[in-house]
Image 1: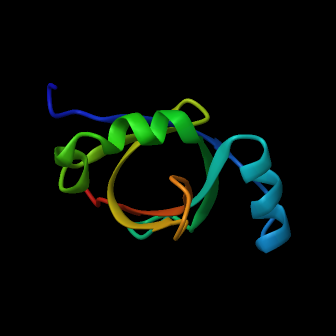
Image 2: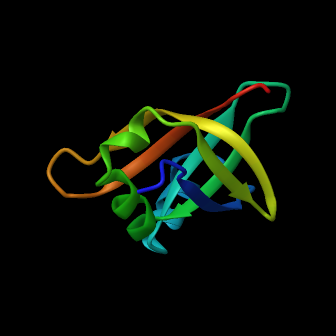
Length: 99
């Protein structure tokens, strides 16, 4: 792999656990991007795409390209919440990288 990982995300507006459950039922992973100069932003990502990226160990330490609604920003993977019994990603935290 070239060392550049790009995550394509969609912005989401609703907050809370019930809104996150709706996102998960659609086969997506709720996530948040915070830090840097911007406000925290709620996003959702495709679950299967996330699983494919996480098979590469470099994704855990690399600076990622996060594409949200056509705007690309640099971020690092800060935290992944996994289901305790199923092979399912429940939530991801990304932290912006200030340039």
